[in-house]
Length: 96
Image (cartoon, rainbow, N blue to C red):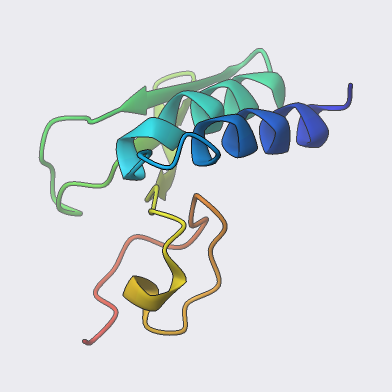
């Protein structure tokens, strides 16, 4: 399996239970991020910081290089934002 197909398979497996919500997709996202580089450390549910409280902070060494949000696949709740079990976006206010 490729990194992406492995991620999609894990998300689909959780989704097919019919009871999965946002937190159920976090392990798949964590594994995807780890697979992208041995030097990356995804931190799930980090302490609140100057950027707020993202679902993940991604570290490269000791430097924060990304803030990510995991989202439920229920597209109606996402107000038109493109997401598929996760949302790779800059952590900021969406203004709504």
